[in-house]
Amino acid sequence: MSITRLPSELIDRIAAGEVVERPASALKELIENALDAGARSVAIRLAGGGTDLIEVSDDGSGMPRAEMALALERHATSKLPDGAIDRVTSFGFRGEALPSIASVSRLTLESRERGGANRAGDGWRIEVDHGGRAGEGPAALPPGTRVRVEGLFARVPARRKFLRSARAEYSACLDTVKRLAMARSDVAFSLEHDGRRVLSLQSAAAPARVAELLSHELDRHGIGIDCGRDGLGLTGVISLPTFNRGMADQQFLFVNSRPVKDRVLVGALRAAYRDLIARDRHPVAALFLAVPLEDVDVNVHPAKTEVRFRDPSAVRGLIIGGLRRALDDAGHRSAAHDQAAAPVMWTSDLDRPPGEGAGLAETHPLAETRVSAGETMVAEARALFDHAPAARAEAATEAVPSFPLGVARGQVAATYIVAEARDGLVIVDQHAAHERLVLERMRRAGRGGAVAPQALLIPEVVELDEPDCDRLEAAAPELAELGLEIERFGPTAMLVRATPAPLGTPDVRGLVADLAAELAELGQALSLRDRLDHVAATIACHGSVRAGRILSVAEMNALLREMEVTPRSGQCNHGRPTWVKLGHGEIEKLFGRK
Image 1 (cartoon, rainbow, N blue to C red):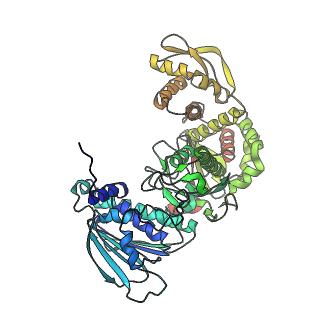
Image 2: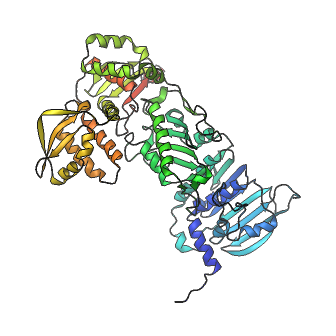
Image 3: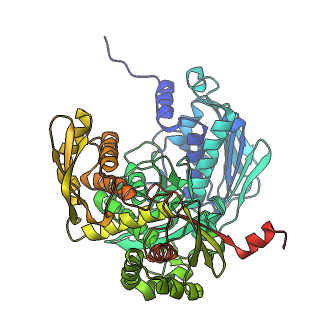
């Protein structure tokens, strides 16, 4: 078999396959070109989800007539003036976008250079039909560039048939516009689809642009992020764990203002919400990571949607640590009952050096409570829960104004605590709330070493399937760190010698059986720390107050007080809310008083 050179048309189509996967890919390249040209306003028109028409107009620097033909050649670019390929500050540089798109569509390029000796009407137009020059001539347009792409993949049926419906392709295009509009909040964007105006964004500060494009509910259910470490900076906004979605379509990640879909960043975001959110749910987030140019490689993907970090562990640590601290500071807030909370504002500026500034401006009555109470209130709450005299309950009742979650007035269905607060009625799921409290106690106890075990007077034998026993035996050292001491007792049984002290007297058989099922689901893919967190959550579930248990008023108040000073107590270990609040105004509406 002899080796021959590929025809230029085929080379262009191969390049198009790398850069232009679908209409959204072509749109991304055209918008990035406009932004790199210094545009302050970008107007986008789509038809048929982008398969029939993509038009991008900008008011950037434009191109002189002599360079327009060069722009349609492969490997021609204006974005590497000094050849520093490892310090790319533009969105792209390869110079393949326009010729690749032109090889699989009918492309019209119109441009007029800004400034200089330009006169009105000296713009120029070049038309390319699936790689072949179709015509050129004068064009009347203001300074800037307009690119029109029609009939994408019309003559490439093998690619066209793999496109999805017009609605799905439009959705992908809209997502692309949103990501680039967030990355460049200083640029105005407008988007039309099939003659209907979809977006009209004026230039604004980054926080305002994010708020405009993400859910407006983030005003009440969002947490601002502003932190830095070792030259890295992280800003943005994330949602409370209880404000989540069934898809990860509302997660926007940026590296040096470049939209990316990077596995390191996505994994770090997921890890930050570990045990705060159900496994099939996803938080809403817009995170902007600032990294020195020499510490990140943006050239690992043709479309530059992935990057490679010199020190990925430092990036992952910054994201997980910063998000965890912000979630801890949110205290017992939960999206299910946060209507009365003051709106949060992300006050950081992307141009500010990492770590400078206050970050999140947030007011909530919990803040004062946590500062003044601290560990003292936790200790008193535990003592009250275990040994609660009636006098302590009466004292708590008198102090209604000082408690964000109010004081207990009763119990409904032996499952829900009803409490009265200054601004409304609070309903608490006792099992979900106590489950979170027990898990946080175990974590605090384990920070200085292993969780203290509580030896059983008579070791208990638990019968299980042999594979379950094998998994538990292999995990015995991990379980011992959590205070659960077990050993093999024959082929199909495990002997339990001690249980974690924070649990009191749990159902040993049910606990061990559930742990075996949890280990079977986790497999060996997770790290030791991840496995310990999952197992600890299961253990905490068994050590918590069950639905159906009658509690005294003193026990209910003790639970409320500890919730107020425990991080992440607004949601259980599975991401469900632990309490809801009905404000006085809402109650009045229910009874027709308003």
